Image (cartoon, rainbow, N blue to C red; front, side, top):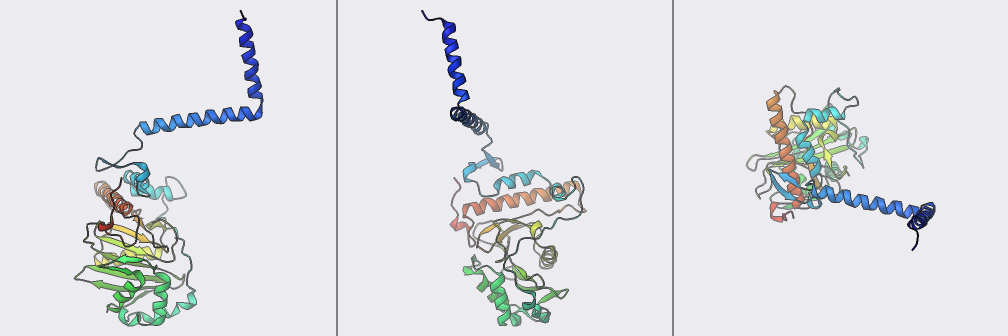
Length: 321
């Protein structure tokens, strides 16, 4: 009968030989690592971390969530003022609003936009007839379909709206120009903002969709922005200042569904990351933050259903699996 100690000694020698062979040793280590990873992932799924709730109800598996939904969940529990503090260079200290410039590409040379200040005070319908202004609109407004009663390319829609506008062109500091249009019966408000010095521009349409999607909505757009997602803190400070003034003048809510259409015609949520709590009580601040987070989440949910199409309506929505 073989000695059991001899068997153990033989197994020990085989184990040492395997471990001392580089290729076999590496294979064993990798196999153990993969096995550990599978076990951990299985435990994560079973623990319930893959379930997301909206209004207390599960709405989708992680693989079918609209993009940025996880960020929306985090934004709902992080107060706006705290997020602003995270953006500052010194933790725990605030140095004012963080307004990092967005990446604008294919900017227009400033010497080609000097004519804009000459249009100050003139009706938009007169200015938009100028070939130079139409060329500027083509350079700034993405050629994407937009549903505004019917599907139309955004540049054509904006030109037609301004052709019907008697509102005067606004020029601030001889540099920032705004073409304006408003349609009281349809409660629509539209603008085109251009920085003649930097050669960048952003358009906007505010109206009340009636097809079942979130409403009212403010959609901003720029052909010069190529990023897939954008937050207000990434917009130029001068634009943010003029947008707030425009919204206050024309009755556009500070907190409303907001989208952004980029140069590729992709429509994403323009998140509420501003600090709305200045001068507000703690209770009011909490309510504003909660409302903004709910609106952003609702907008993301809708865009996930319509696959981020620039001309999407609820009729095109597919249920989230």
